[in-house]
Amino acid sequence: MLYAVVDIETTGSYAAGNGITEIAIVIHDGVKTLNFYESLVNPHVPIPYFIQRLTGIDNNMVAKAPAFEEIAGQVFDLLQDKIFVAHNVNFDYSFVKHHLKNAGYELETKKLCTVRLARKVLPGLNGYSLGKLTARLGINHGEHHRAGGDALATADLLAMIVEKDTEGVIAGMLKGRTSEQYLPPHLPVEELEQLPSSAGVYYFYNASGKIIYIGKAKNIRRRVKSHFSNNKTNRQKQDFLRETHRITYKECATELMAHILESAEIRRLWPVHNRSQRGFLPKFGLFVYEDRQGYRRFAVEKISRSLKPLYTFNTILEGHLRLRELITEFGLCPRLCNVATSMDCGCTEHPEPAIYNNKADDAINWVRKHLPTFALIDKGIDDNEHSCILIMEGNLYGMGYLDDKKQQIKSIETVQKSMEPLQDNDYIRNLVFRHASMFPEKCVSFS
Image 1 (cartoon, rainbow, N blue to C red):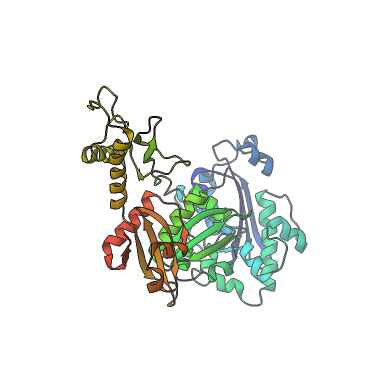
Image 2 (spheres, helix red, strand yellow; image 1 turned 120 degrees about the horizontal axis):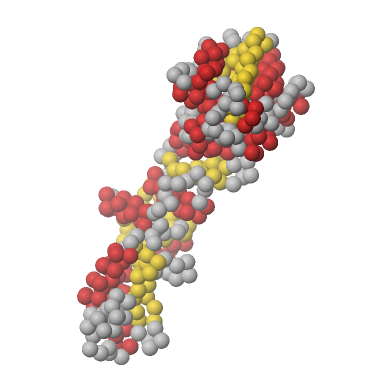
């Protein structure tokens, strides 16, 4: 078995938008080095200053170096029919595969990550970066952050791992498409294996313990594994792989509850890698207030954290249409509803505030009456409980679990005590209403 131990220096963190500035390949048989190749590469894009400081490779050094297309054939010949090895292999492999493909070569080879191998074969060390490993294990490490020095040090690390691999770890990783090969280098495989196959929400953390991504799943383990089932070269995927260090989860009784919890948690924490739900928050609300003359007035305004709206809308037009319906139905003054001026409202005179406010109160009560209050009851996580999603006056109140369904749904106050309050938004509300219309037998209404 022959290994191609690879290290590269690049202009950035993801292959699709960055170039290679240096590449080194060590052909190794697991015991000794058989061949060594190293070359600077002209990326034909400026090298960022901080990378110049890190690697020592500047624009002048690569100005007369070959472009990757010029050495692609030689690189491909060295790599094909070998096991591709690197420290954090998915990063190096994604760059080399991407740039070989652009040059007309399709690289398909098995790969090994010396970070993961070292964690298994050499457990208990205080760190698994290449610098920490070589210092701890007494491996000669030439120029740090240069392709040649790092590749040769990785090759020596590989030889040590091969020698100490008495339990067939390498053979196990090479056997088929094992999920561990595609995991982020810093994510313990044990955290993946302990994930349940039930519905719920999962959280990805970075090295500092900050949540960077939240997802939902019908099957948590299967869904988490799917995040690592490919090696896309775009920036989002490569940053995601590099930053992920830990995973936790919360089980939910149903897929709908997982959907709701995911949406609520994204809005509570706004993880950097969650982008798909940023536009779902309602932007406008129907507000009720009393002016200095004592008249109860309506207005459609942008949502404010300090004021609770009677109802919410995605667009101001939707809000004004609903407000004009109330004006027509209850004889409200358009001026007092902020949709007309005193000259255009059409009112000859206004009754006393107490009399007019009766009309306003009728409109408010009508809106509240037509905003449903109900509990959506479903199976629990185990057989001794039921799950519950509570809607109050058309808005999500929260969700939780009931130990005794018959006893606890007699009054809405009793149900509320078992619920975890959640922030309402149109996206969640529509999910619940859609599910309730499909399964009306699960709904318990409260008058």
